[in-house]
Amino acid sequence: MLGKLINRTDLLEKAANISLARHEVISENISNADTPGYKRKDIQFGDILKEEVGKQNIKVVYDNKATSNRLDGNNVDIEREMAEMAKNSLRYSVLLQTISSRLRSIRSVINEGRR
Image (cartoon, rainbow, N blue to C red; front, top):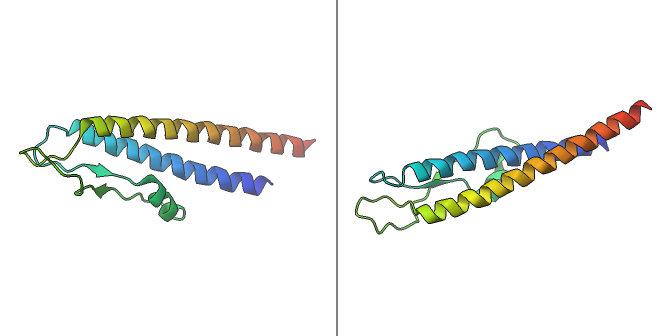
């Protein structure tokens, strides 16, 4: 039982790390919203989590699909980025709460084993 709890906690930790990296990328997009020629970047959370379960690095991709109506070639939509930031923050918060709960469960299993 302890092994399963630890493995699941490891997966949650990887998901939290991906979410944190995505937060940084979205922040970079927001801070470059007025930079001419800047192309937004993103991390596809679900796809990357599947790929990264056994790896340590996280891939950041440029989003050239987003069309730009701006003359300077920048394709950052600040409203979209703020919405993505809110969703990602919520995901990160839930992941951290879940990790905390798992760690409490692990502590409980260890303490019960000592009795």
